Structures are given as structure tokens and as C-alpha cells.
Amino acid sequence: MATTPSTYLGRFPTTRMRRNRRFAWSRELVRENRLSVSDLIWPLFIRDGRGVREPVASMPQVDRLSVDLVVEAVAEAVELGIPVVALFPATDPAKKTPGAEEAWNPENLVCTAVRAIKERFGQKIGVLCDVALDPYTSHGHDGLLENGYVVNDPTLDALCKQAVVQAEAGCDIIAPSDMMDGRIGAVRNALDEHNFEQVLIMSYAAKYASAFYGPFRDAVGSAASLGGGDKKTYQMDPGNGDEALREVALDLDEGADMVMVKPGMPYLDLVWRVKAAFGVPTFAYQVSGEYAMLCAAAQRGWLDHDRVMLESLLGFKRAGADGVLTYFARDAARALATQGK
Ligand code: PBG
Image (cartoon, helix red, strand yellow):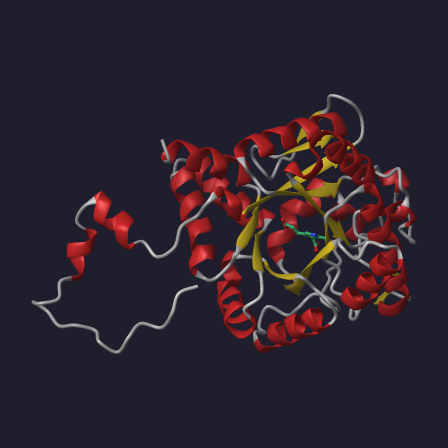
């Protein structure tokens, strides 16, 4: 991570900042931050069936894939050197219930996909699974609902069951994204009790109640379930920054191995503050709405797709992120590979 510049700032005309910028080689030489394929985590959406590829309307180039095609996508990720894929299920609405029981069905889409991926690729790639109930609840909330309120402690038990079946399927990184209080400690305990003390936890520690999740909720079908509802009683208020540091401190104390700030671009100040305050592995999620925004402008010819993609990802690195969850991961990996040639 970058350090504070010295107090020596120089003076024109002896100092000319443009000298270092004159040639490609000198710009390369003094570049402070770089994006590499090892910074990328690629989220993938899973649906049922075989040989099915169903586009997500609000996310160009992103599809819901049946498990066999998810495995093919992971083969590409391995080929490109992407270190981790993140799996999200688009659950058949008929399997959604108020109690989210499908979340801990060992035969659910996520567990089936994890087993298929691990069988074929072993530790050539890491698999991250979200822990939250929203893909499985008929009301679309991340937790259990009682009298219209998402109840914290009963939700923890459900999240632990979900985390354990995912670990049993072979998941390497459990990523709780639900924002219940105490969930990291509860999930860590549950994993340890089932002899999964080696399974990592990446906590969605500072996760905001954001409008930028819209296309994701279309992709997994939770928007329809949620109706006009919002998640403001558990996700953070976009006006708060100090509170994010407190969330991160609690999650680290409860055993998180890595933490995440989400969304990404509108919250880069938090990436910086978290990295500076704790110095732990810190990730950012360039969420679906950020992806949709950049792609939409590129489709209209208003922005250059590859250049804004790489610039936005480099921005995360400059802000101190150790890596980025991004729907651009495959495109960015390809662009980086050709740049290197
Ligand atoms: C589920 C979850 C969400 C995202 C990741 N995990 C949506 C939400 O909280 O409503 C959003 C990802 C994105 O927008 O790309 N808890």
C-alpha cells in the first residue's frame, strides 16, 4: 500500500513532474500500483438444468449457467489464472420458503456446483460461497422474518447450517454477506465444530444498503421476492464511515481471515480506511450496478469498455484493496494477458 509522500515537494522549474510521464517505459518504471490477474475474484450465477445459458438482461455478457457450464467457465478461469470464483444460485422460486430450508440442502445448486468444480480442479482454483438466505427465502431477505422484522439470533443458526453444508461440499472460502450481528463468530464456531477449521472466512464486513445491487437481485431472482422491500435494518447506512471500521473490528475479532467493503467505487474511502486501520487482507466488491453502469455506457459508445474496466479495477488497488470481486474478471484477465504480450 502507498505511503505518505515526504514533505519535499520540489519546485518548478528544477522539478518538472512531466519528465517521468514522457515515455511509456518511464511511466511503467514509476507506476505505483498494478492490476494483476491474481487480484481478481469472478462471481458466477448458477441455475438448474443442463447445457443452459440464460443471459441476465441488466448485466451484459453475464449469464446464469447450469452446473455443467459453470464447470466450463471455471476451466476458463483456471486457464487465465484467476485465483477464486464466487458462486451465486438463481434458485427455482418453487424451492424458496419463508424459512430458507433449501439453503442447507446438500443437493442445492451451490453445493452441487462446488462438488463438480472441486472434483475436476481440486486446488487449482479457490471456490468462495456466499452465506446469506436471500437466494432461498420467499420474502427475499437475507435472514428469517418475524412480524416483518429480520430477526438476528434465529438467523445465525440458519447461516451456520448453510455454511457447514457448503464446507462439506468442498467450499474453500465462506463469505457471510447477511450483516447479522455475531455471524462471523457463530459461523467460525460451527465450521470448527465440524472439523473445518481450515476453511477460510471472507466477511462482507462493511456492506451497505445500496441501490447498486439491483442487477444482482434480478440475476438471482431476489428482487421479485423482496417486492419493494429494502435491507436497511441490517445493511449499513451509506452516510456512515466510522461505523464501517467498527464492523470490521468486530468481524476480525470474531475470526474473519479477510474482510470486504461493498459496493466498491462509491465506497473507496472505506477501502482505504479499512486497509490503513487494520492492515489485513481487504477486498472490494465492484457490484452488479457498477458493472451494469460501465457496460451500458460502453454499449452506447460513450465509454471505452476495456479502458474503463481496467482503470476502475486499478482504482481499487490504489485505494489499498488486495483484490476485487468483479463481473469483469474474465475480460480483465484476458486484457491483462494480451497487454503482457
Ligand atoms: C446477498 C448478496 C447481494 C450481493 C452479494 N450477495 C445482494 C444483496 O445484499 O441484496 C450483491 C452483489 C452485487 O450487486 O453484485 N446477500
